[in-house]
Length: 553
Ligand SMILES: Cc1cc2nc3c(=O)[nH]c(=O)nc-3n(C[C@H](O)[C@H](O)[C@H](O)COP(=O)(O)OP(=O)(O)OC[C@H]3O[C@@H](n4cnc5c(N)ncnc54)[C@H](O)[C@@H]3O)c2cc1C
Image (cartoon, rainbow, N blue to C red; front, side):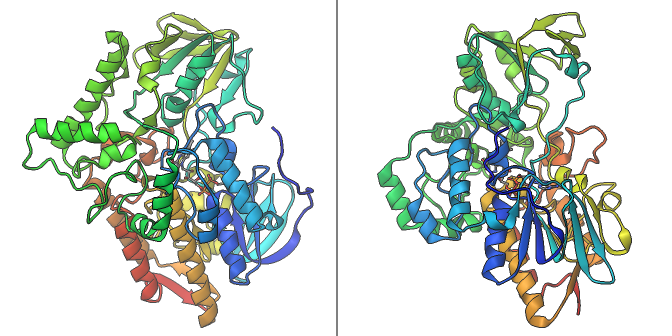
C-alpha cells in the first residue's frame, strides 16, 4: 500500500496529553480540531497512513457515498462549505478522500496525528485518574480522557470459508483495496458477498472483467441512486440556505439520503403513510420515490419499519422492480430477498446493479442453496460438486460492526475491568457515548446511539460537540473524573431495546444485530428512534448537568 503520510515514525514515549483520540476518520479529525480550539493538548493515533478512515480504506471500484454529498460533509465551517464543491449528487470515494485531505490541510490536523499506529491497549489508572494508551509501534502516552473514534465499520469480517488461503491468484478485500487500483481487464473474477460494497462494485467490475461470477448468500434490497452531476444552480440555492438545511438534518428532517431534492415538509419529507390508502395508492407513492432514488425510499412511507403490512407492500414493490429488470427469471428469483423485511438490513443504493445481471459475462451463483465447500488454487467448489474457476477473487464480506474496533483494543476501566468482559453479552452504554465502569472514556457514535441508522457526519458532529462541551463543563467545575452511572446505563439499554422491539429491525438478521459474526451476541446496537429524538435527549442530559453521569474532583 502506498503511504501518503509525511510523518517520520517517531515514538511517543510516556508523553502526556489532555486527550488521546483513537482513529483519524471524520470523527477523530473533527474532534482534534475542536479540542485544539479549546486549548487542550491531544494526540490522535491512526492505523492508516493518512486521514479519512472509511474513505481511506474502502477504495474498491464503484465506492461512493449513499448519503448525498451536500449533506455528507462537515457543517462546522462555513468557509469550508463555501469553498468545497462536490461534483455529483453522491460523491465517489476518491472525491471524499480528497475532501478529508483538504480538511486536514486547512485545519493543519496532521501534526498531532501519529499514523500507521494501531492502538493495542488503553488502560485507566484509578490512582491518577488517567488513561495510558499503547500502540503496536511501541508508543506509550497518557491522557486524562480517551476518546474512541474507531469507526462503526472499520473491522472487516473474515469469512469462514475453507481453503481461502489456497487460492493461487490475487484476493482483494473491498475494505483494504490496493491504493494503485486493480485492472480486471481480460480476467475472470469471482466476488463473494452481495452487501452494500459488492452492490456498488459489481457493475463496475463486470464492465471491465472478461467474466464475473457473483457468489450470493443473502440477496439484499437495493434502490437506484439516480446519481447525476450536481447542477450548479441547485448547489448555489442549497448553499444559500446551508445553515437551514444543516439544522433540518440535525433534527432528523431529512438527512441527505435522496431527500435533498424533495420539498421539505414539516416533520421531514417522510410524511406519507399507508394508513387509509389503497395498495394501489401506496404503490403510486413508491413509484414517485423510486424515481427520485436513494435510501430515503425506505422512509418514503412513514410506517414501513413498524408495520409488517406496509413493509410487505414496499418489499413486493422492489421485488417487482427486480423481476422487471432482470431478464432471466431464475436469476431474478434468486436476486429477490425473501428472508427479511425490507430495510431491516441496511438498504443498498446502486447504479445499474440489477441491470448488470443481464450481461452475458455475469453469472449469479446462489450459495445459500448450494454452499461453498472450499476454495482451492484455481477457484472454488460448491457442496453439490459444481466448480467455478476464476483468476482473481474479491471479498466483500462486510464488517464486525459497531463493537469490532472497540473490542480489538484491550480496554480496561476502573479496577482493571476489561471492556470485553463488560460487553460479553453485548454492548451496554449510556447514550452510546459513556460506559459504566470506564471513567473518562467516550465512544463516538457508539452502540446505543443512532450512528449507522443516520447520516454519520451529522451524528459524528453531534457526539464530538457533546463530548467537548462535557469536557469543558468538567474543566469549569473542577471535575477530573466522569463516569456513566450503572442505573442510567441500564435504563438506557432498556430503552434502546424497547425502541428496537417496536420496529421490524430485530427481524433482519443483520449486522445491526451482530448476526453476520459467528458467536457475536445478538443485540440490536443502534438507537432507532431517530437523530432528532436522540439529540433532544442528549441535549437535555447536558442541560441538566450531565444527569446520569457521576463526577468527581
Ligand atoms: C463502504 C462504506 C460506505 C459508507 N457509506 C456511508 C454513507 O453513505 N453515509 C453514511 O452516513 N455513512 C457511510 N458509511 C459509514 C462511515 O463509516 C461513516 O460515514 C464515517 O466515515 C465514519 O467515520 P469515523 O471517523 O467514525 O470512522 P472511520 O471512518 O471508520 O474511521 C475510524 C478510523 O479509526 C482507525 N482505527 C480503528 N481502530 C484503531 C486502533 N485500534 N488504533 C488506531 N486506529 C484505529 C481506523 O483505521 C479508521 O481509519 C460507509 C461505510 C463504509 C464502510
